[in-house]
Amino acid sequence: MRYWLPSLILVLMLPASQAVESVRDYPVEQLAPNTYIIHGPLGFPSVGNQGFMNNPGFVITTKGVVVIDPGSSLQAGRMVLRQLKTITDKPVTHVLNTHVHGDHWLGNHAIADAYPGALFYAHPLMIERAHNGVAQQWLDLMLRSTEGFTAGTVAIIPTHSTANVKELRTGGVSFRFHAPEKAHSGTDVMIEVVEESVLFLGDNVLNERIARMDDASFRGNIAACEAAIALNTRHYVPGHGRSGGIELPKAFQNYLMTLYQEVKRLYEEDLSDFEMKPQIVPLLEPFNRWVNFDDQIGRHISLAILEVEQENF
Ligand SMILES: [Zn+2]
Figure 1 (spheres, protein in one colour):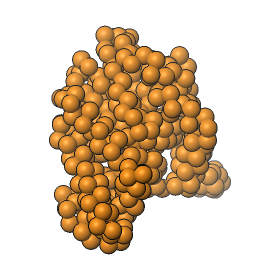
Figure 2 (cartoon, helix red, strand yellow):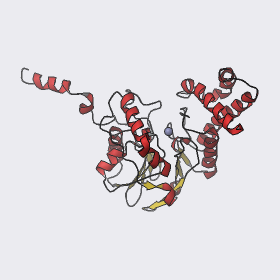
Figure 3 (cartoon, helix red, strand yellow):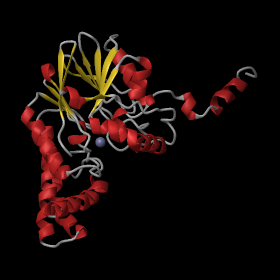
Figure 4 (tube, helix red, strand yellow):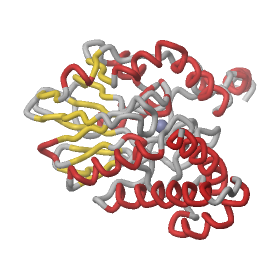
């Protein structure tokens, strides 16, 4: 006993960030013949979820693997690669990021480490804003909200613009980029995997979770839902929450439209935001159990008022 006790004490003295090197495992699920998704937990980044809460995707091609949104940190990206290894030994050839919010793309670090030849793609404004401070904001936010778990993560900002290609063809699979203007973040790309009939929605559509709308436009986001519905793919992958069918963009559009139209109507009756809330909340009954509803609804009404004012200006 005397012999192992000192080494045990040494292990217990190690800081958590050194002892734990990746996010705990989440199962990978097959969505279409060559498309796989890891559905992350709902909610905002926290100590409990180790900052991991998005839906990373893999598409297996004859040349390798295309990864979509590999999570929020180096530690999340490592977990994503561990799940990928359970499916295939093929190398990652491309990484596609849906928008600038770091919970979706800071995991790029793990992919760049393991596959230095992989090509990283995103909306040109995502690339620009990430370089202009947004990457650092998200690194800080992740570190704070996980109390240091994501330490060591470096922002690997994409170098290839989706606007230049519109469609990427690799290993027999076509990835079509649909970029709705000013929707969830002003940097959004929805990715259609043509042969698989899958649409990766980014955060333009969520399922069972209410979005942060601080960088969003209600009208732009409603139009993005419309575009997603018009594509009529077999599978829809939201930025957060379970994948499903066309009912996903329809439901989220319904939430945004109901809220925005009511705010507009009540604004014309000269009501203030706190007077609007008791009238609007009952109309959103199908969504009132979605995660983050209670803490975001007041903010959504305030943001919608600002947008109505701009519209009238
Ligand atoms: Zn987002």
